[in-house]
Structure formats: C-alpha cells, structure tokens
Length: 219
Image 1 (cartoon, rainbow, N blue to C red):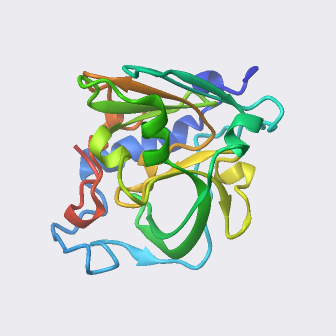
Image 2: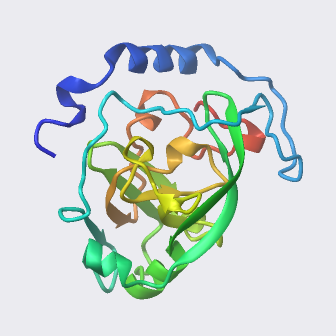
Image 3: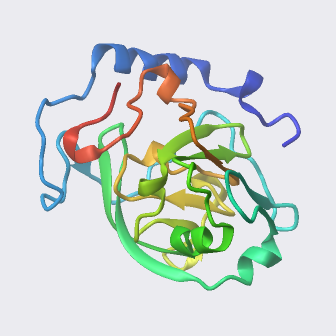
C-alpha cells in the first residue's frame, strides 16, 4: 500500500460533499419499486462506466496481490493470485446501481462465486456479517445473507477483460442487488464477524444496507 491510503490522499472535498448529500437527503424521490422494475427510483441509465473513488487508485500487481479471508470461519485462507486463478470461475450478467443516481445495464463479469468461497472457508454459526477491506483502507459491511447471493462474485474480469485498476482490479466484489458502494474495489480481505461494523460511507451518513429499490441511500 505504501502511502496510497485514505489518510492524507482522500479527496476531502468529495467526501464532505457526499456527507452533505446524506444530511440533506439529496436525490431521494420517496418512491419504492419492485426489482422487476429494472431501473430503481431516482436512477438514470448510462452507457459508460463512471469512475468514482476516494482520490486513490492503488496499483496492485497480480504478483503482490493477496486476499485474506478470516474472522469467524472454520478454514481461514490467504490466497495469492495463483491460488485465485486456480479456483473454478463463474460468469454472471448484472446491472450496476450507483448511489450517485446512475445505473449501467448488462455488465458481464467473471470471477469466483462467493458461494464457492463460503463452501471453502465454512463460516461459523455465529458469523452474521462480512466486512470488506480494500487496499486503499476503504471498508464496507454487508450481511452474510447478502454476501451469499447467487449472483455475487469476487470479480476479476469485466466484459471479457481484466477489471481495470480504476474500477477496482485485480479483484473487486460485485453484489448487484445493493448500491455499488457495497461492492468494494481493490479487495484484499474479507472478515467474518458476529457484530456489524459500519464502513467508510456508512459512518458518514450512508444507509447500512443499501437496497436501490427501496431507496436506502442514506441512513
């Protein structure tokens, strides 16, 4: 990580602006929708993939990338890139919904299914949440039941190519059913816990769950 951490290099103005949005309830429409309605309330479809980060884009080569999975699991693991590559891969197609009100349809992903990972590490009965840790020190929390969704991946490819650095490569989470801040970029650790630990945006006014169809933008 060297100096590429949230301390000192964060776009502080961006963070303050987003906190202000949360305080004001910006973008909220007050409408709920069924997921069958493909575009959630308050969203607009885009064709590009906007780049959003905290001012740091860690440059993590596959040679030094590692993923640690620990906490309340029976079989903790620490994967190198070779270990990750040796796993069976899953392909999914899903939409992206960003809390900043854009959505991108029909994204083609490839990676390791979280269900496959769960079978390997075997969470203990008391594990209720998964805390995602990134190489830029970003964290976000998700319930184990959301993490275990059938369409959730540790994604290494997007549209047939390696996930680009600016979008969170080498590996990022893809959890399509929640706003995309819940899918951490530059993933380096998955921590299984019993007691929830709100992450970077959650402690700054964002919703703890993040369902786009019920407009869980802010908490």
